[in-house]
Image 1 (cartoon, rainbow, N blue to C red):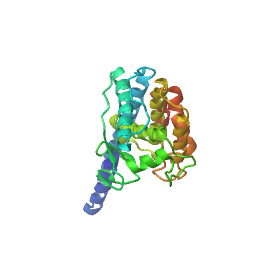
Image 2: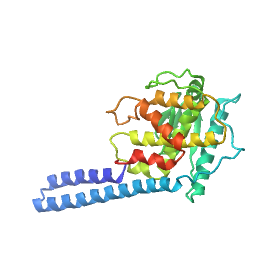
Image 3: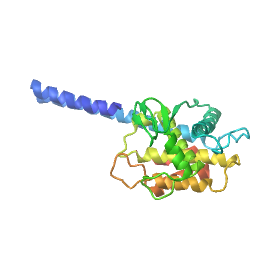
Image 4: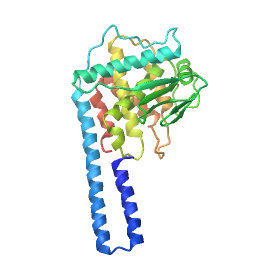
Length: 278
């Protein structure tokens, strides 16, 4: 629970206590003033963290390491899905590690677990089954179901809310790079202080950051024909139209535009726009 939420709960508890205890209006006014001051401090702290997060991304700018030919290719080939996902997250992690290190920032760190087909994993964010593809900040782990990834790779994944077709190795890569970006948001402190009406800004920023990693793959000369279309198709497929839901992730068009913003520019600082005004 964030600090502001705790302050608001404190206000409710104290208000009940005053009602039961029969305190006078002066006591009530003083208490209200105190809680208002605490709420103001919490908001200011949240603003400071958001501004710091934006400063960190701005510091990176174009200081992104050039590709190394020894980096693994982002292709499944004849591997099983477990090995493919492990190789893929290694590529994403190498990019962000080198990028942050080049800017004298702490190296990222995250755990991962590829849920076997037909199995269910217990996580700090709830069960992860055959449809799992999420980052859990409570246990700092990325969970992806091997069946989900395989169906996405083969283009037979059904039930997504958007308009595109999720398919291909780079469709899987888009999803994994997006979840890794959530880990970065957590490490930079933005998760704990975010107070938007929906998670849309966080999701679109994660799409944009995933696009910057995609740009690094392009600069390595590792993209094959159709990879960009696979990422865009998957972004369109996972977009949703439930704009009044707190879990609204962005419309299909918004998610495609966010990924392309990161991919075309290759600058993490470009992704700051999604947190402005939140």
